[in-house]
Length: 514
Image 1 (spheres, rainbow, N blue to C red):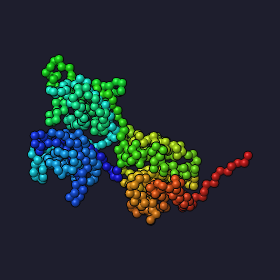
Image 2: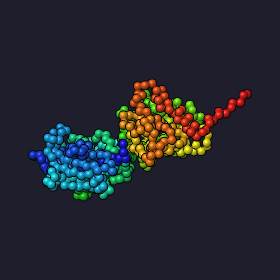
Image 3: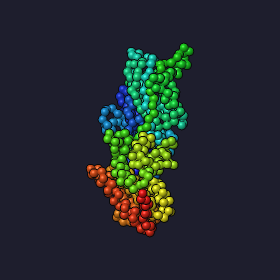
Image 4: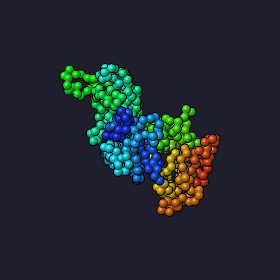
């Protein structure tokens, strides 16, 4: 994510849709489009199609990036789908609305009448949209089966399916998952499935969850078999050897019959919550991610760490290196941080040698959520504090090299310019290695090779301390080529600083002869 962006999921339902099908009801689908300028609309997402339903509650959430500072014009269109084509031009239009994402996000529930065109209502049809920020990237995985369900079909058994609802802050029930239908079976075992934790329970393990089991009918008039309420805390008690069981209760049957026990048993065979990395960097477990560690144990980040670190470490006496990450949500409160210790120890962020940095990086990846924006100034200012403390000693004894490895375009350019200008008066250099295929024009600007870098107020840098190199230029080169390139200017930068200060080199201690 190149800016400070919130990802939101939109839940959509409709009421009293027009009926366009002869002999049956409409088969609606909702598509989300965003204004692309010049009268053009670009599709962002679409829901599933629901057969024979004029009051659909769509299960699939529509996901969109929300920029608080921008006006994002959206169009929701509802169509009657009667073919397998993705093209909507040959499908009947049931109505739509235009609004801004800000209007939806700022409303707890956003309901509007559907229009066939401006000023022409689509019958009594309405659309309701609710937005929820995606703050939690974990997923819940469930395996469920049922036993002894009620028989609902006259000539058969039942065709059961499950629906999961979470209770909204307003107290209403919101659909979060709908299972597949299992035909003619009173003891069904549904496919294992996973739902984003944010969608499932808004990240609240104690939020009420309602589970309904119904008999599917092709005309859309599904019959309730039974339901129960629970929460994720209870569901998580399920294990392979000890499933959690719930009685499936039909409220009307329970009220009418004193001898009524239940309409079957729903068994939660397994319920697990895991981490799902969905930041702009991609899932580190996916080969498409820049953080993906290949079977031979490397990625572009690790190559950059080894290439530069293996040279620099020879000039460090204790081989202890402070290592930090930025642009991620970190536990336990999952706030975005631009200055967190890779070893999760802020009071002692030092790693033993380059191998220690590599080990910390590999261990932290599964524990954080990659996120934006890409801010450099906090980490530059952090290292500058080390350098400032060293400079107070008035000797040429310590020089600091900050290696920044990033795959994102910088988002706090002005603050970073100021931080670099301030740091140019201190004993430190900054090396930036850009991995991936992002636009790195701002990095080249910070390099200062085409002129003196200045702060936003116009103050020039005391000296050139930044070296930027795009990793892509060295993908097929020998590994030492990268370190040679990024470290080429460091000796000159070090000498220029000490000459500027008028500090002579520190004499090494004399070795006493035995």
